[in-house]
Image 1 (cartoon, one colour):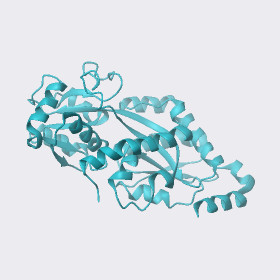
Image 2: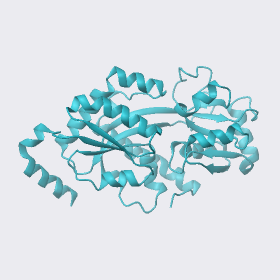
Image 3: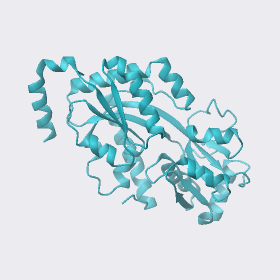
Image 4: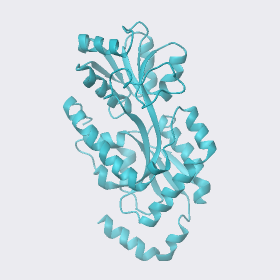
Length: 317
């Protein structure tokens, strides 16, 4: 049905595709207003607008299903797009009754950002390094309270990796975001959190939480004394929280390429790069900000997280 609609759109539009876009574009941010996904989306919208010659309006829609669901059902004309994070891949398994099929309901246009995860604990948690933290987790199991910033969040996915690497099952306490989780950690009621550096570095710098490892291939410039998880002996705890740009499936290829090209041009903008750097967020290279790479990457991420989520038996519905 969607393919037929796309073909009809092409036949009716004809040469008008060359003028795309002719009006403002809406970017749906699949996250709460003021959260990381909303922030990334607004930075991207500002940078893409000049390259599209039209206003790019951001609409933050919280929840892991509602925002993507809206875009999945939108007319595939390129005027309603989605920015979503790693939860896009996880949701294919976390939600057993999704109203859309993740790999087939969207046209991936390119990666937008990538950010490392950090493993932190409350002050006083046994170390003296990540191996010591993992040994304590293995020895004490569900006596350890581990925070999650939400069932479909990167934080929760990282918690699954940490527990799997330790061969243990902690007591996972799910919060609505990172801020309340860190507040509980600073009070001493939570032991371990794995979350993106954007969220944890301010607390690390103030010595309110203790960092033990970063999930990136190389150490972070902002945390040069914190080893990577691979350096610390746990290469399986390797992940980034990433954001991608999507159109509804069935969007004309010419429109997809116009949008993808605007994305790549936006990612070259110095102002965007500075703002991402302030958030400890990396700009993907141009090869990763393409429809071909993003399509393959999304399916690989779905395949990566499916067995991990299924083994944990933790679902969102």
